[in-house]
Image (cartoon, rainbow, N blue to C red; front, top):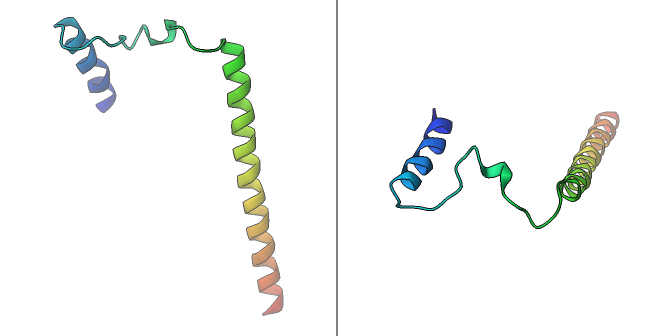
Length: 72
């Protein structure tokens, strides 16, 4: 329900003239600082970096847990 409120309130405020924001269905049409493909590649690289870091933390945690269980 908050999603609907988040879409409708800015639209109503823009229609009555209190704000000047893009409507939720026109946001994707706005011009960005880079092309779509550039943004996609940057996002892909950042997500890959984050996921590989999480994977390394998981592997290290399992290794520490495994070594701790063997020494007991």
